[in-house]
Image (cartoon, rainbow, N blue to C red; front, side, top):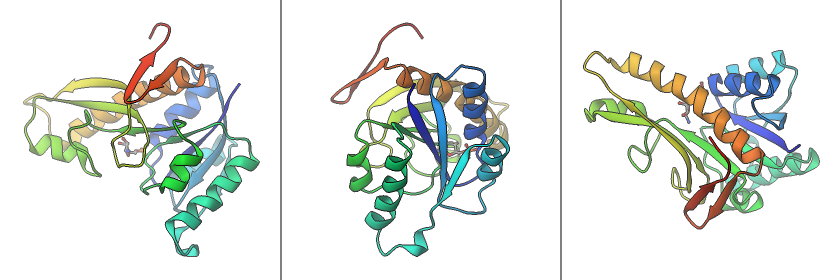
Length: 203
Ligand code: GRF
């Protein structure tokens, strides 16, 4: 079974969904470590409650982005982490990190990429008045919100939606889609061919 780490910065609702799926066997991999760049992140409380080791690495203690990343890589190697799951990790990883875990870093984005990249995707989609938005799970490469797409799920925006209801519906969808994508990856059913991702087996 593969070992993985989840990177967080905040609330950690995706982390919670992942913890639950690991517990019930819905993700066939071992969640060994939760890494946060914010010591006050609520996600850390969730990890501790589930008795998962936590690592807090704060940017102000490092001279450069690369130094920060090298420190994190050191811990991941020590713990024999096979792949990394970003779940609300609000920090850009440098090429040093991306190359160290090439095609082994997953991210979730609350819109249908390549639309609405960036940190305010739900609000941006809502304000753009699009009829359909959704959720994307993708590999992380050296550009932000850009890597090859693993799974996407559309979500219609209705006339009754407010920004708050849309946020809630997007998060609910994330909590279903991300564990599914992580499990597929952990089982070796996600193959990446350039920008194209091929899924083996059934969804
Ligand atoms: C999610 O909407 C995710 O798509 C985005 O950041 C948010 C994290 O939420 N990358 P949480 O910390 O998992 O609750």
